[in-house]
Figure 1 (cartoon, rainbow, N blue to C red):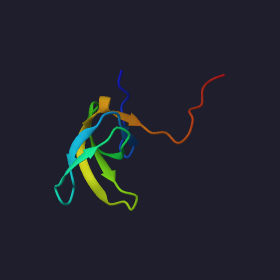
Figure 2: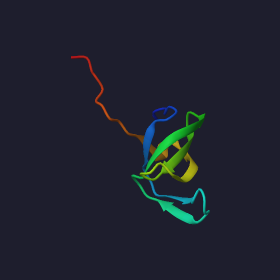
Figure 3: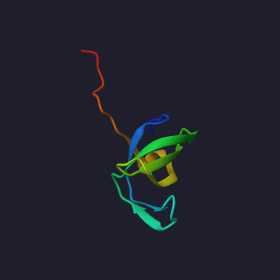
Figure 4: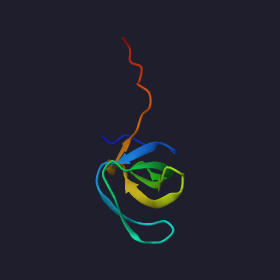
Amino acid sequence: MTEAFHLHDPVALLTDMPARHFVSDQPLLLRRGQLGTIVMIYDDLNYEVEFADTQGRTYAMLPVAADNLMRLRDAPEEVAA
């Protein structure tokens, strides 16, 4: 079962994906592991993901299916003992 994502979740691609540069429209290849952020939720299975450089400049934005994404976590989950 695919886990639902939330707005602004940090994510990584699970597969390589073709894209176009957000400003120049040049073709890009976003590689598996490329980091992005959920910026729009279409439904529980499809999301708009923004990809930006380390300066915060968007270089690609595209719809991505949930099964091509992994949520990134910065803290462990607590579990019952």
